[in-house]
Each structure stands twice: as C-alpha cells, then as structure tokens.
Length: 180
Picture 1 (cartoon, rainbow, N blue to C red):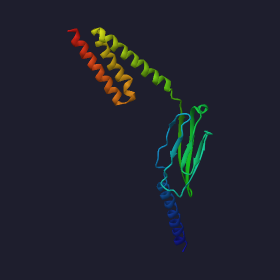
Picture 2 (picture 1 turned 135 degrees about the vertical axis):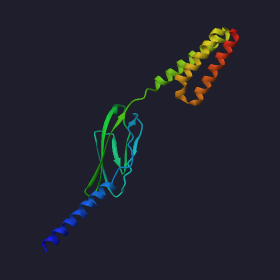
Picture 3 (picture 1 turned 120 degrees about the vertical axis):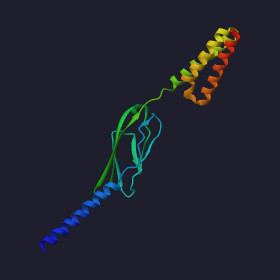
Picture 4 (picture 1 turned 180 degrees about the vertical axis):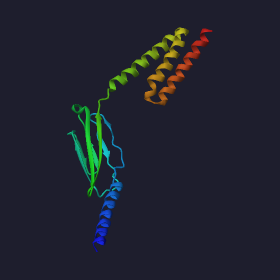
C-alpha cells in the first residue's frame, strides 16, 4: 500500500511538473521591440504574447514611457536623449517570461542633410553653367554630377539619383564631343 501511495504522489508530482514545463514552453513574447526613436516622436511597441490571458508588467527608467494594455508607448522630449532600459515580464500562473531591451532616443540633424543637398546642387549647377561656355568644365561637370548623385542624391531616392546620373553622363559625353 505504501508503495502505491508513493507511486501516486510521484505521478501527480510529475504531472504538475510537466504541466508547468508545458506552460513555460507555451508562454512567450512573439514580437521584437522598437529600439530607436527620435525626440518629439511617438514610440509604440505592440507586445505580442503567445497567450493573451497572461498579465504583462513593465519596469523602466524612462519616465516618458507607459504600458497601456499590451502596448509600450510614450513620446520622449529633447531632454530624454540617451539610452533607456525597459524590462517586460509576462506572467501566466507560476510561469514568468522576461524581455529586456534598451531604447535609444537620438536626435536627427535634418539641417546637415539639407546642407549636403544644397551644396551638392550648387556645385553641380555651377560646373554645368561654366561648362556650357567651356567644354573642359562640361566634362568636369559630368564627373561632379555623377559623384554627387552616387553620394548625396541616392539618399533622397532612386529618382533623384537617376536624374543626376543621366545629367552627369549627358554632360560628360557632350563635353567630350565638344573637345574632340
């Protein structure tokens, strides 16, 4: 009788343990967090758990970040530039799953981008205008257009790059034909 009782307790313990282990495998966070955000821009990370009956909690050192339902959201200010730690835990019974990550709030200097574009266009058109009077400069204008298209215009899209390359190749061939 004692052996059957131990056996029954062992079976029940094994079933409980396997149930907990099965829950651990069944509970997970199936989404990846957003790791960067600009100041004055809304941050949103939609947490996708494997089981929505679980509960989610968040700890963070970012006072601008909030947990609303299953969404981590907030709007950082310019004073919030830096790296902020976030820790999410999802609990289902005795099973806890953690997701730890950092959010980098960084400023984007749009002035620099516009400065590069402006200077690139000034140089391109200056060499093009001078090149219309002097064929040697027209060849140089073609080279400048090609280089600026591949380094600056490409970041504004393929259309800008293609127009710049076409202008550069046209200037290069037109200047070369005038020289010979």
